[in-house]
Length: 116
Image 1 (cartoon, one colour):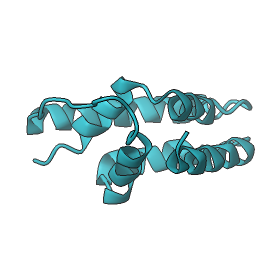
Image 2 (image 1 turned 30 degrees about the horizontal axis):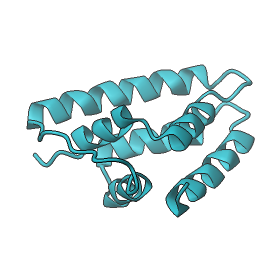
Image 3 (image 1 turned 45 degrees about the vertical axis):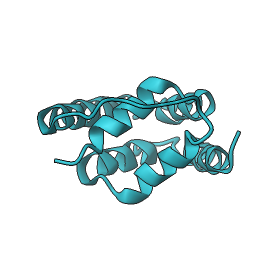
Image 4 (image 1 turned 180 degrees about the vertical axis):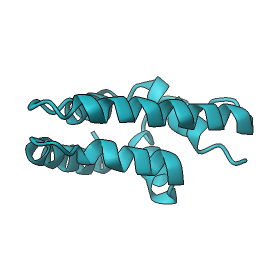
């Protein structure tokens, strides 16, 4: 486990605690990231996956990047609606992704951040 994972675990643990209510901060931040693609998030993910085995993916077209961003946005919107329930779902999913560092997540981030 690297320093980036520990920081992300701390943040999403906090989100799990304050997420008991009608607003899911994790989903809101996720939707912001998908729409604006801030550089700090890509840097964070690269740092989190730094010690993983060779993670190289092909380059993606602008259309593939756009479709991925739209799908992610609507998926996060759906999670935002589900998170209205008294049990926070998004932080639990995020904790699983942070701990296991699946290749599909890194590939998705790479696709979303593809330069147009």
